[in-house]
Image 1 (tube, rainbow, N blue to C red):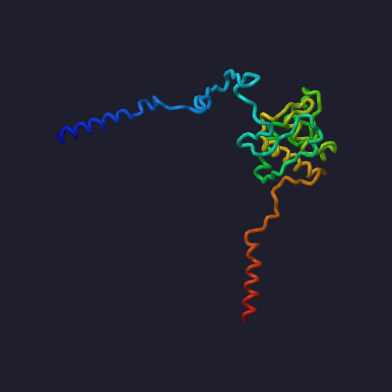
Image 2 (image 1 turned 135 degrees about the vertical axis):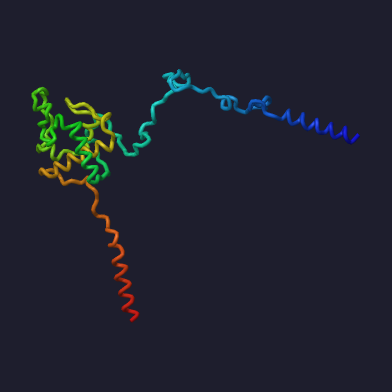
Length: 222
């Protein structure tokens, strides 16, 4: 009799265990859902039509003022806002290697017109094949031009010059402009302000006052 009871109990355990198994990771009786439209929401692929928006586009433009990943630097100039151009600048400062890179980028993208000497006598203009004279950055008109105006020209283009926003990222644009301002500062332009700060104290300067104080304390004890 005990043997029969054991078999019955074991059988019931097996049946219950099998019944509780989740076949295919799907619950056959999920119960009541409070918000079915959220639980079983309809997904839209990026480029498919979407009735939830007036333009029927699933992909949405970024929120105004959004900065792309990897581009933490502010760059919110609006094309045509010349007043903002004159005050626009950056807090970035560049070391010798970055200044050298700025010069290299200038020669690649700008020197063909503006000349590697920044005198407006680049090979494209000097050859006579380009009728409009490019800017001579050593001319008085440009020596004191706000850097923001120059940045806007690089980003949006100016007159016959097209935009270089696709060729130069934000930091590269500022490196090129820092290089221009460095050369201008050496040719009666404004003082150069984009170089590395030299105001940082040297490593051993902070310990000298402490050493002096220690010596003074030793004399007082004597």
